[in-house]
Structure formats: C-alpha cells, structure tokens
Length: 152
Ligand SMILES: NC(=O)c1ccc[n+]([C@@H]2O[C@H](COP(=O)([O-])OP(=O)(O)OC[C@H]3O[C@@H](n4cnc5c(N)ncnc54)[C@H](O)[C@@H]3O)[C@@H](O)[C@H]2O)c1
Image (cartoon, rainbow, N blue to C red):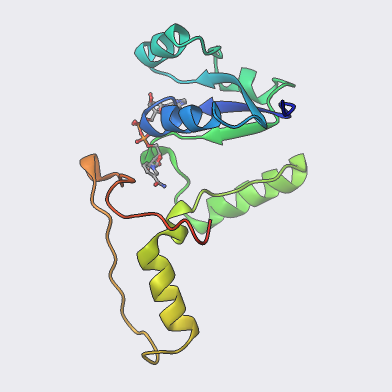
C-alpha cells in the first residue's frame, strides 16, 4: 500500500470543496486534515462524514499536519485586482510556500483546440474570441464541457 504523504486542509466545504474531498479520498498520496467553513450546516455535514472540522482559518494555517491548503470559497471572496495579486505574491515569497491558481478549464477540449489553432497559426491572427461555460448560479459545472484526458 502506498504511503500517505500530504495532509490537505479544505477551506470552503461547498459544492467544489466536497467534490475535491471525494476525489482526494481515492488518492493514496493525500489525507484530509480537516475542513474549514463559516456555515454551521456545512460543518455538521462534514462532521457526519467523519471529517475533522477546524474552528477557524487561523487553526488551518497553524496546523503542522496540513502541507496543502485548498481554497474553495465563493467568487466574491477572490482577490480582484493586480495590486492585490502583488500582495499575494509577496506573501508567498515571505512564507516560502508554493501558491497555485486552479486553472482546470485550460485542459478543456475547446480551449485546447483553440490553443492549437493559434499556436499553429491555422487561421491567422485571432482578434476576437468568445467562450462560455453555463452552469447553475453562474458557476461552471463540469458536465457541460468534456474534459480532455489526453492533456491531463
Ligand atoms: N474550475 C471549475 O471547474 C469550477 C467549478 C465550479 C466552481 N468553481 C469555483 O469554486 C469556488 C467555490 O464554488 P462552489 O460551487 O463550491 O461554491 P459553494 O457556494 O457551493 O461553496 C462555497 C463554500 O465556502 C464557504 N465559505 C464562504 N465564506 C467562507 C470563509 N470566509 N471561510 C470558509 N468558508 C467559507 C461557504 O459556506 C460554502 O460552504 C468558486 O470560486 C467557483 O467559481 C470552479
């Protein structure tokens, strides 16, 4: 049996947070150190599933078992501009941690097809492009577009 190496804390136990946890449960390299959410109902659901529940975000940050923190909070909590991004980059440098933005849509079939067309200059200079993923509440759903298995 493979050794579990990375403890991972999930912040935001909503649709995506719980989906990530379900997938992580099948990966022997990871174990879930706990979830962090501000919604008491979500905390109860996590507890009922046997997941440890953090008291607050600070306890996540100071948990020595959590090598990875996965943030799955709603869009309105995301950083919005370049200045804030610079602040984040500075914080990353200071803490000497790795920071990764989850850009999984870059592996969708349509995105990859357009990228190929552009890279190979098949239709010349692209000056306008529209692409949409429609889902509930304006949030993308994975079933709308088929994910590429080739590029993963
Ligand atoms: N890349 C993709 O394919 C994809 C697909 C769906 C959603 N998303 C993104 O994932 C993110 C989460 O979406 P979702 O559908 O899971 O939303 P959701 O509303 O279902 O879940 C968000 C959870 O975060 C919790 N939360 C809110 N504020 C918090 C805080 N300060 N601290 C801790 N927890 C907090 C909420 O209580 C909720 O349980 C969004 O940014 C969304 O755009 C990405």
